[in-house]
Image 1 (tube, rainbow, N blue to C red):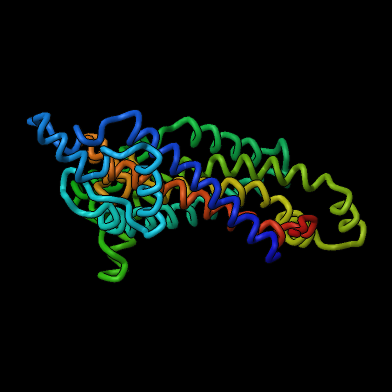
Image 2: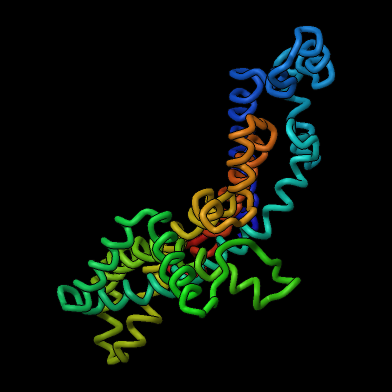
Length: 318
């Protein structure tokens, strides 16, 4: 197990190194950071001074080594617009994004997995067709459509009739007021959970159908075990392997920023910060967001690989 963990961490570090190189080429070689920093009223003299201050007058290999050294020390640079550290920008947006991503993940798992199990245990039944319909509707609807529908039905209509149960936008920290934290995030959670649960329902159904046809499942039934035990103890654990794989990718991606949902519900998360940075041509913030997103995806995949052995006895880590 230790050897496997060390190998996966080393591979993850290599992936992050490659990502950092690609990001450096895109932001420092293919573009002109000095012009972005200088602004619209830039003069050639001031641009030259900025290149010296930022170290852009050095060779590209030396620039990359300096860039990599700052990354290894946890320094993502300084915003061109606000003149504050990118670390502060990421840190201020991370609580909202993490709350949104993790809360929505819990909801879509609670919705998608039971629907998939129900459909797989009764294939071609009415329940299976209803699950298929749910999956098709969920996959077909964009997140902003679901979000606007929830805002109209659960905020605007209820508030108009004197029942302001849900706030329209904003974020409250969980340490400030846990109840208001959940209240402000319910609609964003269900917006993400509905569209994502559909994919998980279909994936769980297909994986369960495949596992329930295995020889060891037939052996378990031949031993006289209860159907509930066969499905949940023997079948589900093995069927969840692809689900966990997708979950790791989804959570890692969401932690890098959920732009549409954060914009729709006014959550000042990482995605909102990245969107503002793109509009303002704030390259360091965009660069920092990309690196943070890549880090979370790599970390999530390492955790997923470790969970394989827990969920599926057929998997051996060495």
